[in-house]
Length: 231
Image (cartoon, rainbow, N blue to C red; front, side, top):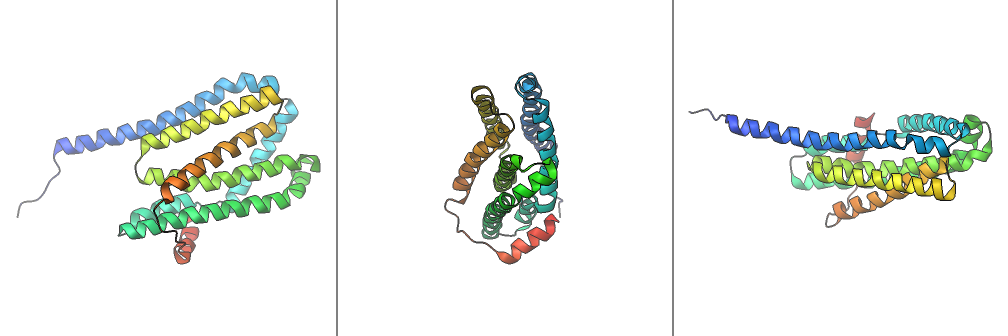
């Protein structure tokens, strides 16, 4: 029997398409890097050394909290999405990941809100920075919620839409930071508020556009496997 072979032209087209989509993701990352560098002079004008110190310590706390509570649901969703044999099963994977991300994000925000005074005292030496710590946890909560949505765009191979949405969020975040920093003399809080507002807006869009028409189902056994995969 003749053996089916992939033609050189189709293989070449696949490589071109792969390179194109990788380039789209790369452009989004490049915009992020360049914008951070371009805004540095503005930040150094309005932020004090104390502000930078607080941001550095909160960044450390954010990294630790992500390591402790981040179960990589987005990565697990991608794995089980492509492992699913049927479209119905893929829908269950998506809705389980989305609902679990929203619940874990809400839990993170609540726990962080309660623990913030003690964390502020231990990390920053004074409870007067409690509000900053609470904003940090709210920002992390929104990030957890967003991850499933952006991962789903990657699963669908919507590289252009992914780049458009993430870049739009980045630009909106920068604009809001500048408004709060220049217009309202807010420094540390400006970064977190901008992340919270833009992340919440992106989450609402992703959840509404993705879950519309899908049966909302939380598969507990699947969720447990996703959590184990994340760790």
